[in-house]
Length: 197
Image (cartoon, rainbow, N blue to C red; front, top):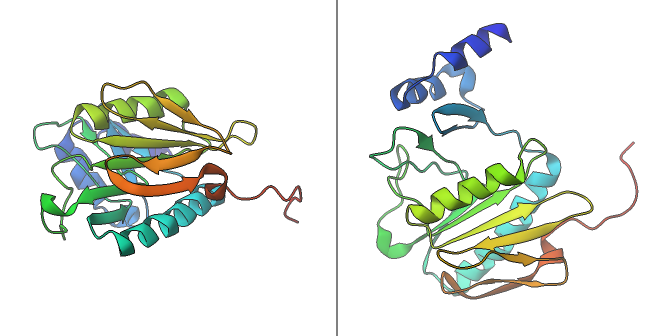
């Protein structure tokens, strides 16, 4: 653990970060570079459930509306920004932005970025990510908050007030995913009231 901490402390630049993430010991791990600091993504089962179920609705939508591509954990980094490299949990990119990249991060922000809260994700940090996406070209951001008593989705758009959706509200794709609609509670697991044994 001390060796890994030491390695992380030596990552100061985007060049250091790119070299760090391709090390063999990091093959199965996901790291972001935020304000010049390495952050490891640590998803839970709940996180994975939400990403998978939302992905099902999104792919069904895309089957009927082939307007672009959805990606799970694709990396995005602006060419002139050496302090940020993000991996949204799910992202959407319009078809006209070009072919699917086979190597390296996309050099732009996605049209839609979706972030699902993990236990170590603070709302303030998630909202700062949303602000970054929107300030750099994203047209919409969905933030999923997963606390048992405060499950909700925040919809962020450029120059508009944040829209907070509760369990009985409808999440819609606006002008980014025209015609996409799903009730929020369909995107969170049902509460069975039973604990795993």
